[in-house]
Image (tube, rainbow, N blue to C red):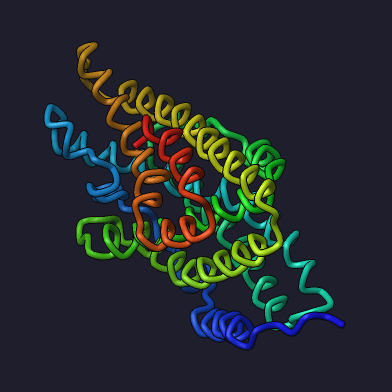
Length: 310
């Protein structure tokens, strides 16, 4: 006989379904609404882009660098959602003949992730229309997904939970309060946040469910895999930061000294590490779940491995 599913878990999935139905949005009707990105305003706020720390840049230069970073911010979300959707479809099979509420919630999760990927493709089309030629995305979404999905489910769900949580943190702490952002860009992340709020709950539920299956040795391998995945993410960030800094420098109407060029490259990489690694690691919710699953020795391994990135 199948084990009974705790009512509280089923109720949490049911709550996600209820909210998903209530906040459901359409890309054209509710988000884009025949608008363009306003290139007279910033895309990514200073708290995430760190452009204000490059004091030798003029106001218009800081504005444009925020737009370059905002374009990448959207593209990287579209990239990671490729693997996230595949993993969610994979873990949903565990509910096929069990908790049908959990299955419906995860099917909705998958449907929303597909929509988000389309949304970010549309954002890139809009950005390309009004920004100078020469911008590139350095990582291939399918190649990244294959690398991530080759690791243990525990590690993949841990990384996913980390991403979903920092998505919520970024919107509430940095994007929502900012009044000088392109209205369309800001609306993209408002609607993204509305659905990601449920995804973060389900990530945690599925991660905890996976953790309960593991032996100590399997969990230890999961910790190793998680470290490797974060290092791989950093590799993507390094490549994109270098490409974005080059694009920014090449499209400006003045020359920067070698020291200034290096400062731009260093700051863009610092900003991307802050966005995609540090801000999520430092958030109390993610660390609370993670440290509740692992030993002190494993926590020290993670801290040592990620120290140079922090």
